[in-house]
Length: 476
Ligand code: GLU
Image 1: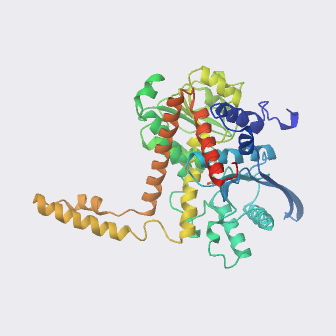
Image 2 (image 1 turned 30 degrees about the vertical axis):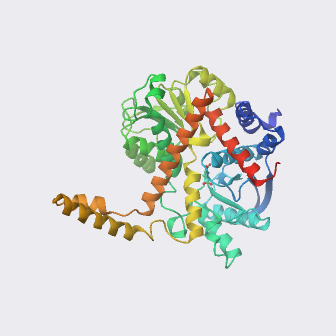
């Protein structure tokens, strides 16, 4: 492995961790190795350099869009803005998208994009200029479109960037009736779907909650069933980490530590997440929160004893140098690739259960799929059937009241009569996808007696991709 391709933990994220995980799962599959190679290989890499005038000077911006797999179209995956963006990283993340979509039965190929800029130190105006120019480059090479490749938010991007992408796309593709579906994670007013913003965090919550509801799993690691009272540490308070923390907090879990770039805060009795967020907004940092002690070295927060550790920021934060110090019973990978392959084996030997990224953080792309469908159908979820359901519920209620000779209170009526809104449908669709997928993975794990959820998740994903290649008739 060349020095250049190694990060500070001495490990190439793509070639090493993902490939190793893939190969472990492939041992359970008897298929022509050529098919496995085709699945593993990255299909297209578009590396671009473009000039942007920033503060009266021309700056050359380096960016990527990687389409890992075309077995289903469009390709799908977020765009990250970070000064650490590099080609290997984006290829790795695109590969994870392929497996993530396959596992969740979201009918897309995997992709990822990245722009090498630091969004913290770049002005909003300049980020807009760079985003629009990046979109223009994608259009020029046919790397974006509702049926080609559909970007979404990722680390360092959000609704704002998605709006600029949409606006640039629609202005260059006038008359395209499906143009809204060229990007997901948009604001509601721009064709976004309710529930997308918090979808990854909510998916993480649903996935861990499902695991924690199974007595057999919990007693094997010495924990009681349920989320309530569990000691949780979350690393990263971006969109994913923040919503994850909030959903656990509202379910009576104890968030004992929160870690950010500048340091971490700890309170063994649990932190009030909404108060931490207001403190962060007021002071610009989570540090010096009145009800907590500061931990200066943020990575030390990962080593505190807890029940559930949730890395929700960047890749490779748990590596061979700190894995043996991890003191959690469960690790839920809200980030993409937070555990290196070497760390994975160390943690497994310690008996820590890992709920892997390609399943656990797939709530984002699942709801992106709902958004894409909404855009293509040109109608809000629930718009057509809401009133009909309410009328039907009303009639049923009248019949029940007549038969039982009882009247139901106005308060109860309100609950029973209500038809589903967009947010109800999106959330229940997400919950159903996360829960049913968890059981598919768990059943496969049990039936083949596989040691861990990661290998099983890869196996499930690879099997689905093989199936779709076979049905395509590509491999006789
Ligand atoms: N960036 C998110 C991920 O890594 C979402 C991708 C999408 O919605 O397309 O899963």
